[in-house]
Image (cartoon, rainbow, N blue to C red; front, top):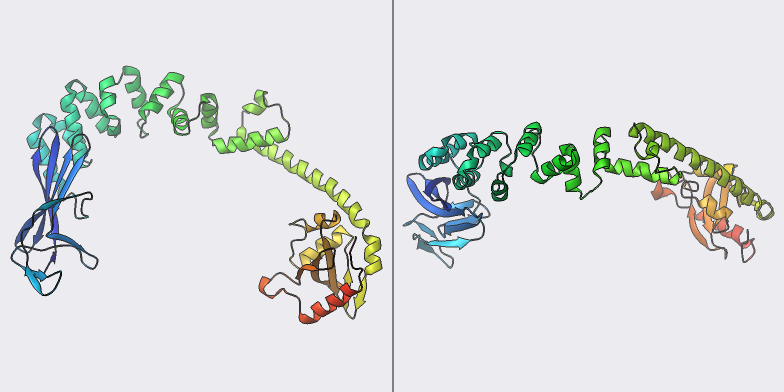
Length: 395
């Protein structure tokens, strides 16, 4: 049988080019090495594990120890042997790093000259510390810079290229002034070259932007590029002089943006009023046809609307989208036909018709969309009204 074990690891070998770790399983008084993991200085890795380590969907990673019995793949039981290692692309999901103190002690034992660096880097993963020590060994004259960058949580800047090219005085001073950020070296150099803030340079680099002046302006305004683009679009719509700094770089972007929004809103309202005046005229032209074809059957009244206020009221009472979806505009322009039904002089239903009298839509109160279809009696009354109309409805 196989056992669910506790996993630990040993640092078994360290050279200038690689670090080798052995993971072992513990169950009661038994111990078995099951994984050999080697990390090379160039970033490549080698993973090997024994067939004694197997994965079960029920139990997770289980280990079979030699001379025990386990279920055979075919039938019965078989003796567990000490299987050899085989290569894998994935490190089995056991405890990767058991006691970190152990690794730090081993590093200090192997590299006593880097004890100070190891202490500074003790919160990092052990393979990151290993790579740092190798770089320190390759560039001994940069050791103080490496230690300083690690201490200030900028160890990601310690790359082969950066160490080879070196950190000049201006760059070091810039890094010192911006230690609150997880710094990007290219953005740092861009900021120094163009004399802008790190935030501006980083945004330009990340979004492939070239307008540093705009980025610096937005940074001071504490606004996003999307916000600025929205403001620019509205200015263009209002035909503002975009070459004028008053509009291009207002002293208070948020305040100017709100001002432009109000202008756009006022423009839309004026346009809406103007359009509605035209719509009202077009609706009134339908009055003669509506009065001519109007029909009353009991408490029901069938007619074609010709008043905008009537359409608004009808839509509001029946929770219909005659206004919001601009059915009233289509109707006024002759693109569709609306027929209103009232009961006891109150909005009761709405039908949308084709010119050949075919019904496209027919709804009563739409507050409940599942119960807004017309009743059979209303359908019959509607069909009787349609029979009184000409073959072609021309309003």
